[in-house]
Image (cartoon, rainbow, N blue to C red; front, side):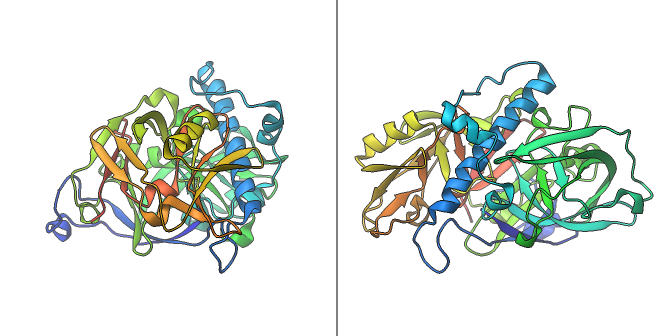
Length: 397
């Protein structure tokens, strides 16, 4: 899921949201977002399997690196790590280059570093924790506030594609907010296709997953610690049109029910909470860096069997399909919050025979949890709370 963000600077006054239904936190920075790409062939609803296969390879690579970062930072093996079959493990160190992977997966917006500020488009991902840019996107020597002690970073994406370079700290600027001494990694080589509109990746997961190590906080934590935001919350509201990201609080004008929260174990680094799907208990990692919902294969097959759906295998992953006129009911439940996928989000495209393919795939990406992305997020307002280590959901207004 690749989306373009157009940042709108300025605080949202409390009075401007007074007419909204449930009031929880009303200060912050509102960011308009719009959808840019899908996993289907241009101009059709037919799935482009080259894009899908690249997407799955990207997830394997990302989670393999997340677990490596976690072990480096904590000295422990991540409790959700799952060993991949040998043929898939090789793909986690890569089969598809990052320039192919990134199309249609992340949120793209504008960020700036330095004094004077140097702006660049960048992808935002709640499934990783570092800010990395291509060479030339940010030039430390042009900033009077840039610093480095020579620390290096190395992180792998896809088949042999890596980002390696030097970690700097500088003043970050985003949507009118600023925080000094915020980490940014400048790669020695281009690791993301700038023709797609992005010059890097900026993670919004927890510090335990940082490739930079525990002494370099993700940018949102730097904003919070600097007092640049009034709350350690950020909110995603993804719609066909009028989508928004809200930094530093929640925007109650965007939801119609009181948010229901699930606590998470922040020591694990992911936005991971318990949930259920049609009564089947799961662990859910809420990840804006994935388009569909990816479950461990055995757990996905359990759901497919319960729904009575036929399946097929594509590049090692299992998919289910159905008559587009009779979509199955898929209901996610987080605590007392329950929501079914809309008819539009129950499928992410069609086969060449015109059948709808379920937006839940069985794919071993190295994690014993469901990676719940765009197909879920389009149905709800998602709130990420770094102050209280929890994830919340509410119905859209």
